[in-house]
Amino acid sequence: MDTIQINHLTKHYRGKDTPALNDVSLTISAGMFGLLGKNGAGKSTLMRILTTLDQATAGSIQMCGIPITQRAAIRAQVGYLPQNFGFYPTMTVSDALTYLAILAHVPARDQHRRIASLLAQVNLTKQARTKVKALSGGMRQRLGIAQALVNQPKVLIVDEPTAGLDPEERIRFRNLLAEFAQERIVLLSTHIVSDIEATTNRIGVLDQGHLLFTGTTAQLQTQAAGHVFASSLPVAELSAFKARYEISEQIVQGDTAHIRFLATAAMPGASTVAPTLEEAYLYLQSRPTCQGVRQ
Ligand SMILES: Nc1ncnc2c1ncn2[C@@H]1O[C@H](COP(=O)(O)OP(=O)(O)OP(=O)(O)O)[C@@H](O)[C@H]1O
Image (cartoon, rainbow, N blue to C red; front, top):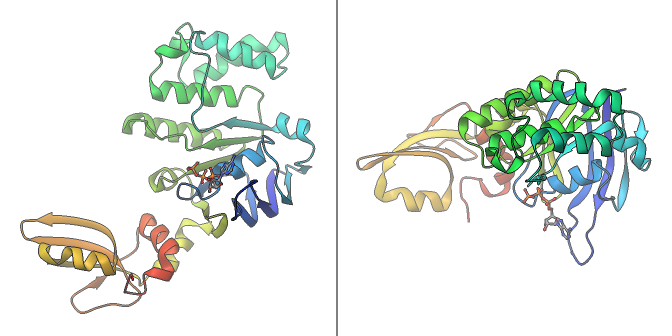
């Protein structure tokens, strides 16, 4: 039963008026699942609860049939790449992984083979003797995935993993995640819509602790259909327009601005266009304010 079942999960931090997670219910099945949300939406809180590093105030979770309260059993199922992942900078890649394999109780006879295989999978075999501090950002993140997989988990949780990577490394990293998702649940938390677009069509959207949406990317785009428009206007009118409408794209050519924007209804001179995922995500989060007027 390879699913994560989250039921009515709430998390209150001490001293905070509003909960970081507010009655979140979600089912995540095998393969890649994207958790989208702005900064402060509650993504890291959810990740930390799923990895047993923190505890919910209310609600329950079953991971692959095991209640989250059975922490040791859950930890044996989960690999985690946290945001701002720090490693042992003066260790070599291979020594750092061996050390983590020991901590994860990987039997001594399996350690060498498993680490060699992981390094090959994340394309770091040549860097096995390199010190961690000498790795590029992308290499470090790939090492982060290797360490998360050292105990062969059924569930891999990665929190904002592509922040700070250059485009080439970002693509490489996303492909790696998609590969690993063929055999397990991969939960990818991000605020970068293109990370989701490139890896999965199953998503949840968190906003201020609430789960605003769960379903496929196509369903999210369908919700926004008829609310995204394209138009052109004089550059001089752009500021006034922006004050009233959510602009999702603008290209300025000379005195003319070519724009795409969100609104509840069509207006003269604007044509309806198919929403991109980014626009659908924007629409979901700005529905109360994009009634055509943004005051
Ligand atoms: N240890 C903590 N103590 C108190 N409040 C916290 C703590 N951790 C997070 N919060 C608060 O909980 C809310 C959700 O934060 P969280 O880090 O889970 O969001 P996020 O979606 O992961 O955002 P980010 O990408 O910025 O990390 C925020 O209001 C944050 O200030």
